[in-house]
Length: 247
Image (tube, rainbow, N blue to C red; front, side, top):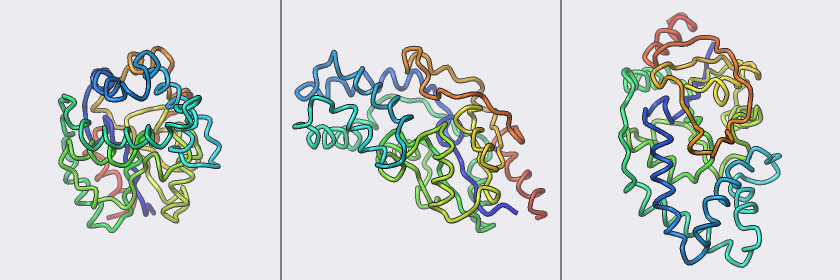
């Protein structure tokens, strides 16, 4: 019987053009750091830091691991750089233009999960600080209080598609993988959860996502594609769970 549902955020609970958004994100964040990191270095340092998170072995948080890479040679500015990141996410992030659609049935799904008393996790790739993850939830007017856990840069030591990311979530909510369902749109980042014994549901609203423009051809997913146990629109998750638990 399922006791927890892990749900991806980007292009699962919120539908948007990730590539276009992160291009606009770069346009805003680079000049925000002008006096701390030269513009010609910033983008490469940021992408190197994000890609480098795949190598985190769990000894430190993703934040510390990211800053080790991003701040290489700038150790004296480490605190100032992190404070500047937080300042950007607090004051500038929501100013980036974005067009978001909400998949049909999202509100009904969250209501039903709450009615069943299931543990619900926002299992979004923890590449950014908590404030950024919360602001993306706000795009869909989703109250973070509806979830038992939201993964982010500070409370995670691994990133997708590392199996350890899902193992850490299970440890944090105190449940075995077999008691969990992972819902997401990505056959690499999300469906890898199935290799731990977590059942998987592949959502279909977003279609294929091209991350090439974000990563300059180097895919931060860096993993193989996995088959899903089930697939369909997000709204179908309610019926799937109802059948699975005999409700």
